[in-house]
Length: 353
Ligand SMILES: C[S@@+](CC[C@H](N)C(=O)[O-])C[C@H]1O[C@@H](n2cnc3c(N)ncnc32)[C@H](O)[C@@H]1O
Image 1 (tube, rainbow, N blue to C red):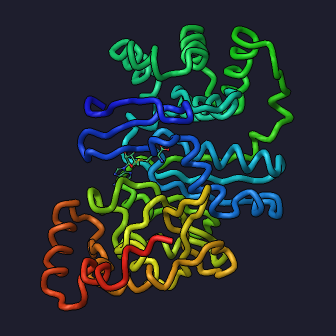
Image 2 (cartoon, rainbow, N blue to C red):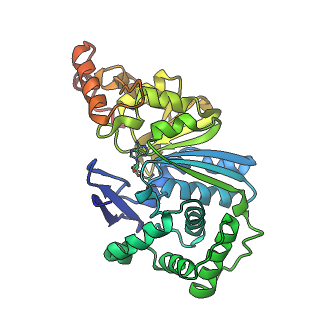
Image 3 (tube, rainbow, N blue to C red):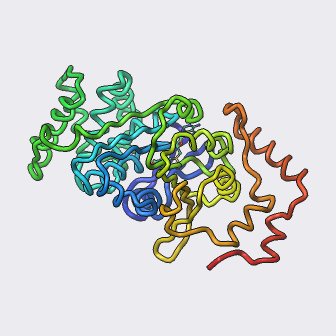
């Protein structure tokens, strides 16, 4: 965790910067806002939840959990009875373990309490890791963590509760919160919808975890670091694996508008679209079901995909490192004699609407 910096994004939620990949975890315009815009509003998630009794979400790159939190928030708000299953893939426990504490812009603590209960129940190293983190990083705790959640964690740990059933832990955490911290919004936890939220997080390289998950995901959130910096989870081979996990009515969304990634998804048989919000366009959505695409890519975008810029990243064994994947692609680009992206742009402009 030494190489991670924290900051407040423009919507008041905390974002992070990774010093190793030199990449941001979250958009500066808002970490929470980004999860709503790019993974919920762009995919018809709310409508789907209203119209169905169950929804399966694959959150690739959980990080500090904004996209999982958004899925829980919108699923339960649109259909309190829905059976929500979330499978999250994340390589770093150190990062994910902070998700219940981060100032995330949600007014109520319920989702953070749910994640806290999940980690307390399932991971024996969680308690010591967080105790140690609070001790070693008092400034991060003070500036970027919710004081209430830190108090709930400390009360739970100091009282030595030994209980290992998730619902019971959640109830204890909830009681600590509403008895000691806030009197408002008391709700009966046993009667509420949390029992219908089935969350699991697989801690490994996403390329390994994805081989071991079932198929049938209705929503896939792809939030890996930028393709040209860390292409591991954007290759033809990885996305081909993900294709086999998406349901026929499923939709994949990502913040990235990378041309090799779009071309890969196109070659894999997806219909493609972009995200348009507040008069700006960004990101990519992909589905086998054409009706799921709200804003199609333009002819310009499709043309660009046929240039050198569209040459996919490859990782046949699903085990190459980023630098070899980038190097192999560069070699392929230099050998290939199709039009370059710069020639295409000279000829057809920059494609802005
Ligand atoms: C852009 S951040 C994701 C932000 C996240 N969705 C959130 O809400 O905070 C990328 C995440 O990918 C994780 N990651 C990097 N390489 C990975 C890999 N090979 N497999 C799985 N996760 C990976 C990083 O630890 C980081 O948390």
